Image 1 (cartoon, helix red, strand yellow):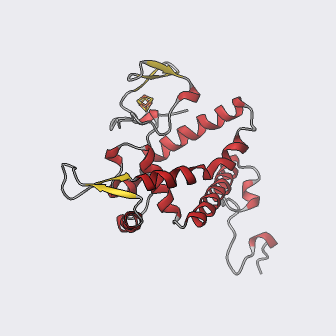
Image 2 (image 1 turned 90 degrees about the vertical axis):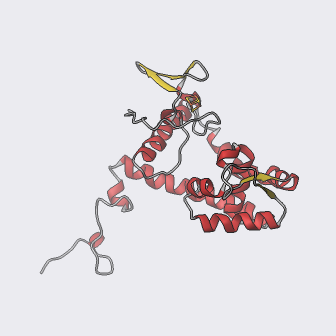
Length: 223
Ligand code: SF4
């Protein structure tokens, strides 16, 4: 009879030693540990967002929509784009938008060329609520600010490349990093923005650039 080690028996199923989520599998695999770490950090983001949502009587996605509209250009502030941005269905975004509209926090700008769609703008009341809630992630930021600048730059360098690669592989729908932008150029190991006409240091690579324009041919191999 086959005898399994204790850590391979679990309600009749085999536990995969190499699973990202098996603490034993993580021990010697830094990628697994990073994924589990990112999951923990995303929990913090969710908790902070929920706490603020409860205080102002909005759902987390309604808060995210308001903040997004505050800081992004009109072409991105419509139901279709918001659904892609937040990876949720158009009906879910439409529901959230309907409630924000009823609460007087947004208006619908129907002056678009496409008569079937509209842009979403904030009303003065929407602006006021954003000013109240947009500090929800401050506890996370203040923890990061306790780290050495060089550590932060290394972390940011890896994160920005990871986001770009996830997008190129079709896993992440939307990204606006320099690496996928039509104004981005690389000479040797130097990153360059042709719009700003300047070299970009690692810490100057943008994750969400206002001037970003997609370069459909971008397929840069990052190291
Ligand atoms: S326009 Fe923005 S995203 Fe594009 S390369 Fe320049 S800084 Fe980067």
